[in-house]
Length: 440
Image (tube, rainbow, N blue to C red; front, side, top):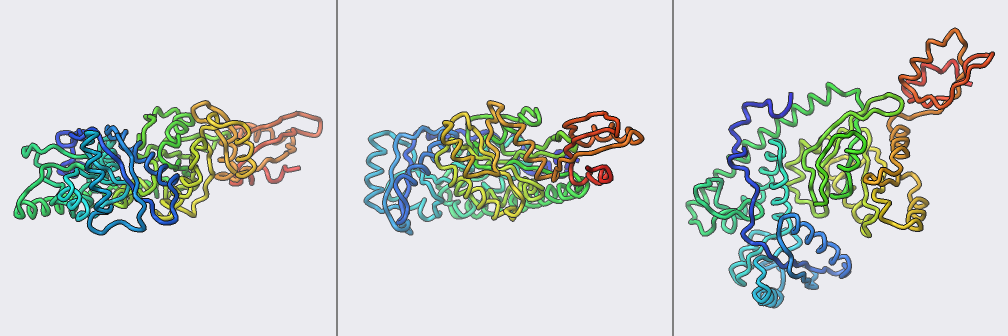
């Protein structure tokens, strides 16, 4: 049964009539971050470059990028007051409509910045939530994103939230925010509405999770492989290459939100299930990790993870750590994984040789250029099936076994001689018992 079969979930107000792509009123922004002690300016610049890509995906044009060296954020305004005064003046001169901060602001910090300095401000989390909102297409994804939005917005009602009533006519912000300046009575009404919706969505997601758990038990004997990796590492491109699934591929962050699964038939004939998953990112909002529990079950239930890495990105080692951090958070770090360094056509041969020596167990591919895919599949088969290469001598009285071997194994060589049939095969450890008596 698919998720859409749950008629009783139709009362969740996240259908097409209320779930539109969010159009920001603000189209231009400055971005800003704190450089803490022990952090380098280069590291901070890299994180701001990522924030700029997030802003671009959200349809916001970044006009300037600024940093302040500070051991810890100011409790009331995040940045120092002098820094914010200067930023406010620069924003006015550049006609930047919005300040985006590269960390999650507390409700008090957001209110104080807007009230004291006259700056419209949002944080990294709100940008990511907005992107997820616009990219959510299925009912399940909309429920999960909607839950994360509500959990984020509940403590920020005074600054951000009207409520779902479209008749209020407020212009929404990236996170789904609407009109401001409500009285305390209206805020209490909105809090009650949000908590009611949170309860409904949690109940719906719990049923999705239970249904997926039932499906998991039904296909328990089927081996499962999951593609994981930092966002935009090329997971969907590889997924399409291996399964011809036709999954959307865009050069944008978080193009994939829903987990998509297809059967992948290996050379031995053994079918496995391959799943594409949402990309991870540094400082991934905990609201999203919690909300996407049903989707992340695909990762937790995998027998093997293909950890996709954009080898052409200078920070790929940092991204590997960030992905492993999220895997640890969802209790999937102990699942066997193969590092898959993608986009090798974007680096020179010297660097590629160095990386091959440094990561001898990894696969080095170009999913887009269709390079080394066979090598990757061989590694997958060896890890998930425990494939063995065996030399056999079959008597002619066992010739009927040949057709069976063509179904369950890869025949590398086959020769008919006087003493019998000489065969070299690659076969999974689970099937090797069939030919144990004929190994030479």
